[in-house]
Image (cartoon, rainbow, N blue to C red; front, side, top):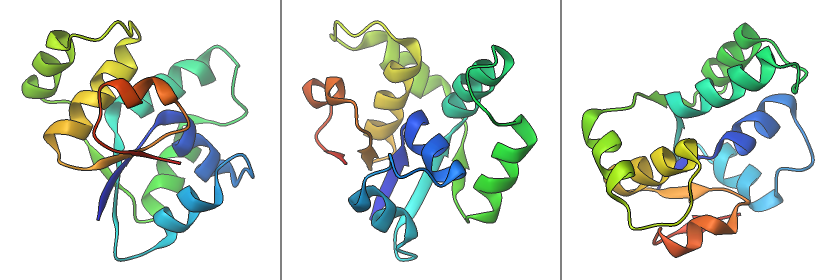
Length: 125
């Protein structure tokens, strides 16, 4: 199966946090799954690092994602168009882009955030 990680899941995976659910961890570790990390998450997490809200450096994030065999995904014009067009009250632009990528890349989202349940077919945690 194919999964896209929400930003908090990427961060918790990277630092080895026990806040990542056991189901999420097992899905990420299962080599038969394709695990995607969005450019959106790099932007969101790097922004939080810049504001000293996370104890991590950008190069550590990139290295950890690459070393784990996770695949990065860029933001396309189609992702942006769908994110802007959603009839969804959720205003977080990062979440809107992640939801659009999840739909257009035909995958499930690994996220703790139940706000996605109103817009996505499948969210796992």
